[in-house]
Length: 252
Image (cartoon, rainbow, N blue to C red; front, side, top):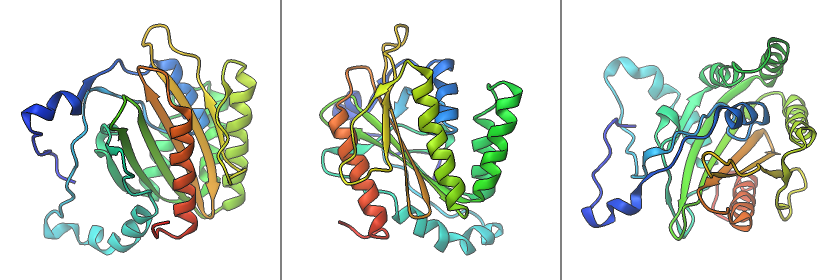
């Protein structure tokens, strides 16, 4: 994807660019363990919501071209932009959508555990290694009628049982914290769990974390906004994403 985004028209600029406080370090640690944002620290200050354009680099990047078909397959398994949504803010350095290799994904998942105590960090690293990550696709969505932002991540794994184990651990961890409340149920998908974080008094940011597994994918959805989150809208989008995976990337 290019480093430059097309400039939005002046009239739409206030709608596309917002200044929201960054998520606190505490939430970042929870997300690291829970897998909701996995490795992502949500940086929404002055976030640009314009569409990014993917471009190929120099001839030296032949290896990237060779891997393109696998990247395209994983990208197709991300839910296309639904009605009433537009491209969301950048996710770290990835822009609002990106596919990265298994090696890169493993490194970034491990980096997300940096703030954990050493014993938990080492256990987290081992569980990540067991997944045998093949790739990671990310995309952000921004609701057109509210300040709701939804980030979706699909982690493609070889070891499906390890994926189910880590997802179960993530859900149990959030329950054990005793501060997260149960989020919405995802219709037709019993393997999906959502948890609502207590509203942060400093940032005044609402946060909803969801995780699921479908086929060979670990699915993480993180929704946030400065006003109360429409949990029904998040549940609906996650259900659409899981149905889309079941259809192997075809529109449903």
